Length: 248
Length: 226
Image (cartoon, rainbow over all chains, first blue to last red; front, top):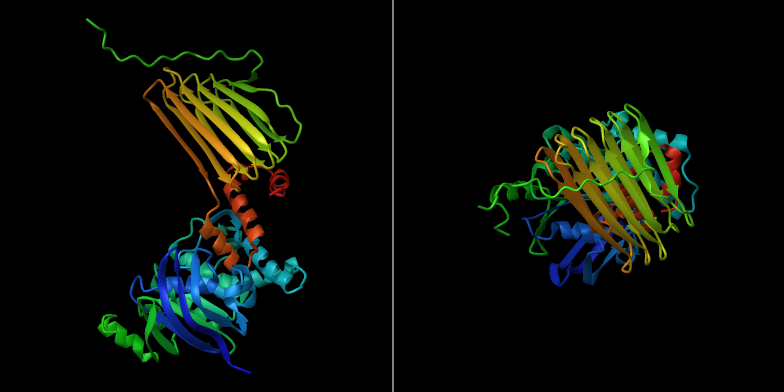
């Protein structure tokens, strides 16, 4: 059996009539952590949005195969059920909906899609508690409204908490480091590292080296003007820090 | 020579309806009114005396159509009126809501928050007047009316009006008519919540400011129709 988890072939995509991704090819194998780096406006966030199925983005050609399935034929919720998780750069605030109720909806929707009964309340609460400890969130966190009034660091920790709850196969972290202080950055990175194993993969999208000091990538890509213009090992991160993106 | 003195507008006091419910000095009244199909609702008139408070919530269920009139007269200092309302209109439901908030004397507070969700051909008309009398200094009055349209053919009209005849007031109002936020919806779906459930959660969030103060049973019964 192939160890390829994600295969993107000649992907062209954009928003309205503007093409942003201009032919992306990318192969990710189980166990790998890939970093996608690039200047602002290169198409990094578009790539993550297209992978997660954001409706505003139109794929004009190319293909994405995830775990043997045609990802582009799936709705955002189906992608989540299949094991794709996108950590948002700007997590959305949902006042009036507690984290407990939000996660209950998410966890049970996936179970339903898998033909399973709702998780038993005691089992669910135990899972919540375990994963909250994982991102160092206190008990009262469960009763708070989703991201409502959260600091930047709390929002990102909440993303990693949800990631831990949903236990995805492919995690996409879109600029997860933006707006984080060192402590929050470490909690987030520790979480991502602890969730990683040989059967999973991550895509870390970032402008800066900072997060990649904590989440060490196997493969680094430079995305520029909608194309991957360079791919190398983790040593590329230090090189980019020295030279910037102009040399590519 | 013409008289150039600036007058305090043309304040015409509104007569307090004789049948208005009088809330005595220091008394608190709290009411939640569930409006369902076929119901007829009489005018809701209140007169608040010194230090009195009114907490009124109306919940209009799908199937309810009608004209509602709420008039509140703040006639004693330090009176406080809190009006909230939520409606879910479907089919050809039509809801018209007129609210008059009369600050007759000073040092009173009033808050209004009305939120509508309209689907199919449903329509709502909100007409909200806040009248602050010339003698009603140190008035605080807030008014919100927000509407979410779920279909092309649904409609919401909102007409907030402030009539202020004195300077020493703190008044604000906000009115919106819009659709569900697409980014919010995508966020929930990306966590595996199916589109229909995600929309219901969004509407729960939208109605939250109106429903937060209700007891859980009334709130959940209303939200269960989403």
